[in-house]
Length: 333
Ligand code: ACO
Image 1 (spheres, rainbow, N blue to C red):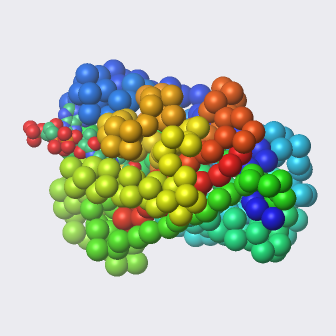
Image 2 (cartoon, rainbow, N blue to C red; image 1 turned 180 degrees about the vertical axis):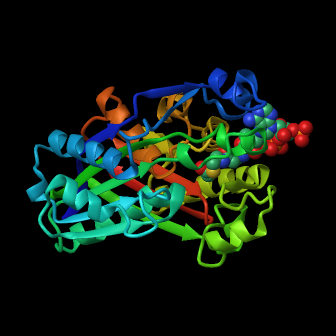
């Protein structure tokens, strides 16, 4: 028995924010953002309407509908996010409640941009060993509430957007179909190169207030952009090749690579490096920005609805991000 995706779903907030709108709030411009990142617009959560858990719930409902399943059929929830509604508990339990699932396990995954691939890897283990028949995997992010929207934060803020994607996995015994392998990696020595350092148990809110330092931006995400870029292009290519090699496959066998939508320039670099055709790589960062753990399931769901994924196609999902963490999941649809 192998695990296989039975249904996909996505939810994007209705609030479209263009580069021109950002240029009214900080010193940036449409051309700079497009040239460096490929992003034209992104979605921001509607205050009072969208939360990480609510967006994840809507995406999950759509994935369950697409699979022809109900919340009662779900045996395990995996919820990947770096932007939960609460410091604790994580949003997995909110999803269990919102959907009306049985009192099943709900695991929160916090591996940032790689969160969805990490979650797929765990789902695959539960399904292959028979501990679960259906696993719901959700990636959802609400970045907009926590970004530095002043010029000081522009190198990070213009990149990120909000949204959610979900998949339901089940089991198949059809020869050749299903998850072929997953590969996970981490390198914590670079943890602070792409991170949000406070508030945390090392630096809690009273200490931050006490410092009363207007230059203290520890509660905003920080990114060493060039450093991240250089590592991303190497690790993405490595982990994709690792998956292909371990299954005796090559890039020409791939129907579609769905990379984490970090930056269009990173995706184009990898495409070139691996010698993939343009139609073998799915990108939608132009419309949604970087939605971290949600980016792969949103892209997967869109690609599927556009007819870009058919039964029997070889689909590679690969991610790199904060941690650093990176990983891949290779599935014969
Ligand atoms: N608008 C206008 N100018 C800006 C902006 C902005 N939004 N942001 C930075 N700049 C300026 C900088 O101040 C700098 O000006 P200076 O030369 O006068 O000092 C200049 O542009 C170049 O800044 P860099 O940070 O060196 O810009 P770079 O060319 O590296 O591009 C970018 C920044 C796009 C973030 C790039 O480093 C990159 O692609 N990094 C990869 C990381 C990434 O994409 N992360 C995504 C999230 S992480 C993930 O998902 C893996």
